Length: 517
Image 1 (cartoon, one colour):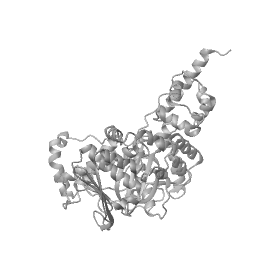
Image 2: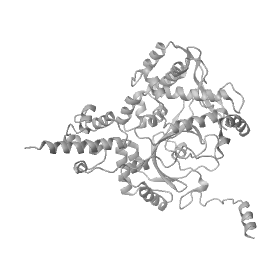
Image 3: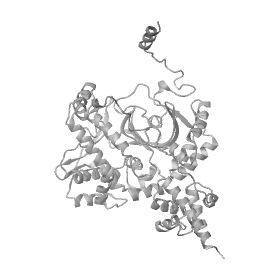
Image 4: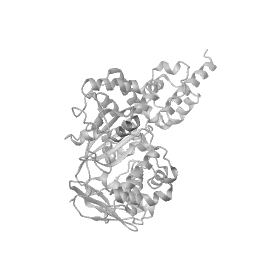
């Protein structure tokens, strides 16, 4: 006869272990249910049944246990050994984005900063748009690209409908009292802020209080048409269509700068326009890809970049949205134009930048995935495992990059990536040992080399747990050592042949010789 108390004890330990794994990987009950159904639609549990398992009220079947073991890359026996793991270590990225304390603190008071910043920007030639983008990026990173108020506002309008077709977005616009008008205007050349003129297309603009003008060029691309209209719906909802915002433009001039402004220096309206562009862009993404259903969609698609085509969304939106909806928090995202201008940046894991987004640097590392893809002719997505040394800190990244064209026809590269070190640490794997093994292989092969079998197995396991398919794709290729600046290349064999000479200031030598005499 079965012992009821033995079953309860067994159920308690199983439930506790499953719950611990789920929470450690930032999954909701609904996320885990979707993952199980993705593996086996017949044996996948409902949310309520999973809850009962975690609370020890049900004992899962062997078929379900095999599914859960596969998702979390655990041996089946692990769930039955009745021993609980210790609390997990903090898996936050090693690079803090909060900055360092500065002294004397009174110099950084609000009143002094408000007086000094406009003068500083004017003297350095920094535009209001450039400054605003730095502030917005810091705001995004400090909030981990999570803005619940904007999400709720979008969901209240779209009712979490997913996917939304073009006619659905037009219906929302009509419900809000927006009038749609069309105009014909093809792209033109505009130097804007780049050295080389780019094709430029005015996609759409808002005319207060309730008219949206759309370029007929958008009709050929439903994904872009939906995004532009959703963007103007955002302005109507968030700002009651007051009209204080920039036209939506692809190409020569970065969206966010007032296009009627000739001054290259600080302009407070530029900051307002840039902020509203960010708000409306985030709202539009949340409207077209509401958090819960889109998160489940990405899970079913294993975060494949080309899954955007299945739901008539741009790849830009899908890759940007990954960092907002993924249960894994350690993401980064770049949108890069040749020869190295960053139009959009998100560094939720504190990844250093390969170049500045306000001006080009003279010695960027050419081994970053975005640089390699900028110089590629292929339009297929490509995954890359990279080791980055930042001071004494070593980091391990995987990214997926793809060449694309904006609405004006200009080529650019989209890159979404994750920091793998926290994922390894959460599985009780020492990231440093894994990184050292991969780095040794890279150095033995001139800077890029095959990933050792044990490290590859670890990365493939992490990829399955995170359900990001392109991590395994990257692990199957050679890993690459990258750096922030090629003048400080960390490879055993310098990527430039030999390291450039470092200029040494004579001031310290003079001081040392005087003090020592």
